[in-house]
Image (cartoon, rainbow, N blue to C red):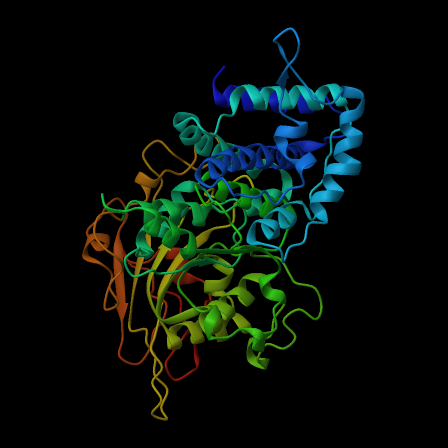
Length: 493
């Protein structure tokens, strides 16, 4: 049985268990078990490399000492704990022990405690639980290079399936989008550039960044480059399930100690608690939009940036607190940000003033279906250098727009017809976005059509015109901001 079929059979087993309700719980259950299984096999490798290696896990709680099937007297592999006892062991011994690890003892302790801090064992049936372990024992050999390579793809498919699991879909961004955005921002290994996703969900942007950085290694690359890649990846996630999924995702992608994946609320950090050490070279993210933070969160933001809408709060942080000077960002944002007024108009003015917004890629409906059918856009920008001469400087002067059309034969995107990287018109060849204009290889690509808008004094939404921005951009009352800090309301074409 291949790996994909094994995972499917495990999910079928879980469906028989009365304690597991829905795809999100099945995925959470499978992921913490996968984490312990893979971590145990990684520990075997670390023990071979370092005879003095000491596990952060108590001896009894290591996968090999309670879950792994071992040969019996007849030579056949059998469970170490009886079906009648395994659920009690997991609920009353394993989980309390892992939740109580000293997070300050080492980065590994911190990772494991973070993973299990809010995790749950949903299964109630001992026989079904052991059946899942037996399948994992048969199919998952992380020492085998082929299995290791395939496991990442299978895990990606599991995360893709999560899109239909109610609100859990908010944590997953399709691979075509993550790869495209990372490729355009182009984090560079030689310069030790750091990539941050402040709302990392299941880690799609971070795994794409890992792959992108690995492709820059030379034949002489070794441990030093691997350590540089690990140091280049940072993520923050508020909720338990996606944090668990992201941490396991990092482990599967060769990040041995993913301690840089923090389990906390980015928006819950006080405005003045951020400092220069928190600023990074690249921010690539799909912040949650349409949601609102609890009362009190963001209460110390500057008065003109104070809001409880999550996407707006993230944009304020990215522009003012997270990006270094000349740092590059790619952010997924809904139409509401582009066309909203009030705080959104203030944020757009801030974006155009403090950053060079050089590219807007317009995505069609369905890219994030079935979670949402809201139309979304990819914004690419570079943080401008501070000019302190007593005058106001706008770093944005030219914006290139690209409307991404559906590929031939598509009327929409869906789970059965997902977006593909090759369908994102802009060419993937060439380097990072130049700061002056859109890269040539973006402008000349097809399908779709590029257009630019440049003005010495003001930036306004273009009116409907063949070959320019989409017509529904130009005809609605939308707020784009002028350098004189007033709101331009374009008249209808």
